[in-house]
Amino acid sequence: MVFVYAALLVLALIGAKFSFRSFNTKEYLSMDSTNAVRGVFILLVFLSHMMQYYVYTEEIDVLGGAVSRALGQMIVVMFMFYSGYGIGESVKRKGPAYIKSFPVNRVLKTWLHFAIGVFIYYIISLILGLKYPASQVWLAFIGWTSIGNSNWYIFAVIILYIITWIAFTAAKKNRYIAAGIVTALTVVYIVVMYFFKENWWFDTSLCYVAGLWYSLFREKIEKLLTKNNIIWIIVLVVSAVGWWYSHFCRTIPAMRILEAVLFSLFVVTLSLKISIRCKPLVWVGKYTFEIYILMRIPMKLFGIWGLSAYNLYVYFAVILATTLLLSFLFSKLLGVIDKLLFKTKKA
Image 1 (cartoon, helix red, strand yellow):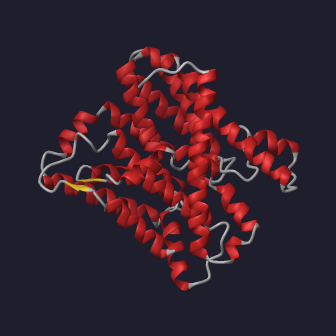
Image 2: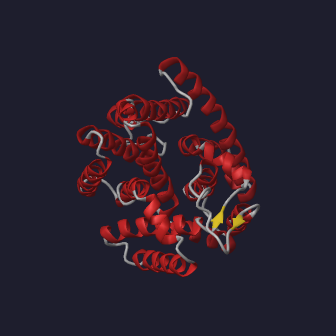
C-alpha cells in the first residue's frame, strides 16, 4: 500500500501553491484550503481503518501499513483543530445568536446525523445475522459503544460542543473567559475518560481547544509567524521536533496529548507556505463526516463477499469508490432531513 500513500502525496502536491518569499495568510485557513487538508487526512483515516479488514502480507504493503501506525492519532488532529477554530470564528462573526442556536444546530444535528448512520449499521447487522446485546445497541446511538461503526470521534465532538455551549453561555459575550472555561472542562473530560476508555478517546481533544484559542489570537499569532522566514522556520522546526520527540514518549498520556497539539501547530505553520489546492481533495474534504461514518460498510461487506481475498489494490479501489458514492448520497439524504427538521440559514 506504500504506492497508495505515495499517490496521495502526489495528489496533495498537484496544484499546490508554494509561497517561498511571502506567506499565504489569506487562504491557509479558508474553506477550500481546510477542506483540502481534511481530504488528505480522511483518506489517511480510510487507509488506517482498511488495515482492520485486510491483512497485509507483501513486504511493500506492510511498509505502507507502517505509515498508518506511525501517524497514529495524528490523522484526526486537524479535524479537531479546524472544528475548534471554526467555532471560534462563527462566534466572532455571529455573536450570542450563534451560541443560542448551538444546542440544536450543532449538538442535536450532529447527533442526529450520527444516529442515522448507526441505524444503517444496525439494519445491515440484522441482514447479516449479527447479534448485539440490547445495551450495546442503545449505547451505540450516543457513540459510547459500537455495532461495527466508528464512534469515539463523534462522541468526543458532541461532548466538546456541549462544553462549548455551556462555556459561552456562562461567559456571555466574553470570548476569552469562555475559551478558558472550555479549556478547563475539556481537561476534566480528558481526566474522566482516562479512567473509562482507551487513550484515543481523549488524546486529541485539546486540539479542538487549540483551534478555539487560535481563532482568538489569530492576528497576533500570524504577526509573529510571518514576521520573517527565520521565525517561521524556527516555529516549524520546534513544533516538528517536539512532535517527533513526544511521539516516542506517547506511552505517557500527557505526551500523547502534547504530540497531537504540536502536530496541529506544525501543520498550520506549514500551511502558511504550502497551500493544497487539489480539487478532488477539496471535494473529498467536504464529505469528511459522511466518509468517516460510512467507510466501514463497504470494507466489511466486500470483505464478506470475498473481494479482499482477490487483490489488495482492487479491493482498495472498489471500497473507496463505493464509500465516496455512499457518502455523497448520504449527504443528500441528510440535507433533505435537515430541511424538514431544522431552520437553516445561508452561511
